[in-house]
Image (cartoon, rainbow, N blue to C red; front, side, top):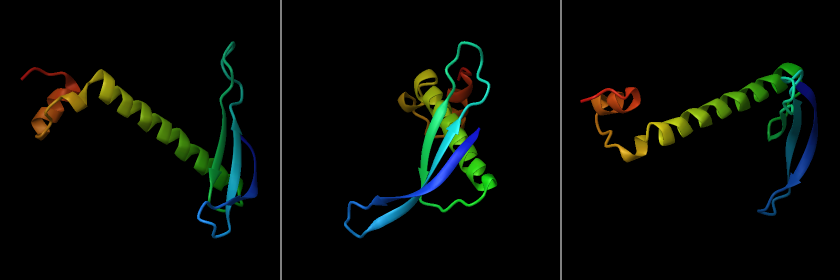
Length: 100
């Protein structure tokens, strides 16, 4: 999963100088046959010095992606934004599809 990282500097829009960032290039190893491997280019303002730190940041991004998928399902599949979910009971019914 880890391919490499290095420090770079980005100029802040505020004009206060450069903001040091760490770039991470993560590539999927051994994707399924016929599937293009995933490649992520990530930036962080944290100084990462070990492989474990880099892998942890990649895992954070993987979890974030799963959270985004979960909320997309809630919004489109369960239509939670269109339902009056003012009480815990209504929220449970909305998420499980249970009748009143």
